[in-house]
Amino acid sequence: TAVGQGLGAAKSLSDVTVYIESCDNVGDAGATAVGQELGALKNLTNVALTFWRCCKVGDAAATAVGQGLGAAKSLSDVTVYIESCDNVGDAGATAVGQELGALKNLTNVALTFWRCCKVGDAAATAVGQGL
Image (cartoon, rainbow, N blue to C red; front, side, top):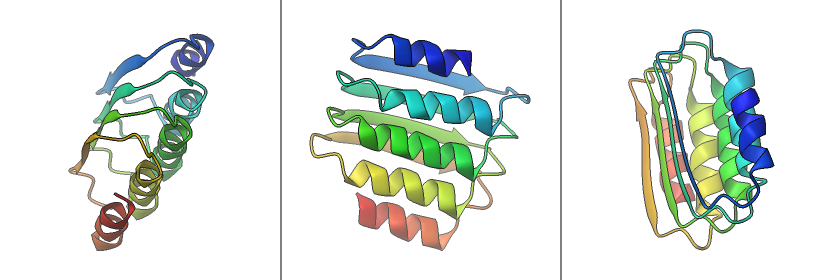
């Protein structure tokens, strides 16, 4: 959660890159904190987030990331890779896609839910509709 709090305190950031990889002890609380603080960054135009092989990251965290991104209204370039996170399913993936769709300045999106076995047709449909 300290990473998330640090992001929120740096109010003038315009570009943020966060890689959380193979961190077996990072779960919903830590990833949620990152997502929540992104929304407080009013100058944020570019963000790249990667959660790879974070076994404890689930729908709650993905939803918070989506909400944080959706609150960062100046975003134009977004990269979100949620990969091999076995606890992320349709609810989390849907939230990310729908929130991105609300960003009016968005010109570039890279969104991956690779090897997230619980993400299915409902999420893919919702992400497509959101964008």
